[in-house]
Length: 171
Image (cartoon, rainbow, N blue to C red):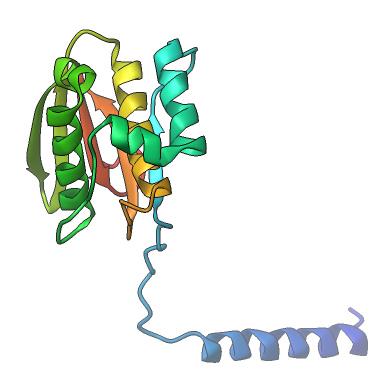
């Protein structure tokens, strides 16, 4: 058996690198939760939306102040993002006739330590209902009415719409 000096030197250097890596790691470091970037996401599935949904989307991007005026939304106040959204949606559901007809209930709900909003609707498909809410929140953000500190999810769950803070499908 031949031992080459090159192999011995390589082994020693490898061991020294491993020791340095262990020293750099804090011993009682806990895995960190990744910080979610503030924003709004909607889970709607695939397919086309009605013309009205597309029109609301265009307004939310190109002329959000007009969308807010059409929905009678003037402010979004609250202690946290969910309270702000609840306040904003109440204004829309009470102020705009189309929203009054479609969205029939808005209730705050808890699931463990999570707080969210459960929204019931009628007259339109759930995909469209989710997307209208998405456009409403995006428009409010673009009009500088809604200032978010967290990632907001809007999704269909068992025939109701849930709005909550966190990653997709974490409700």
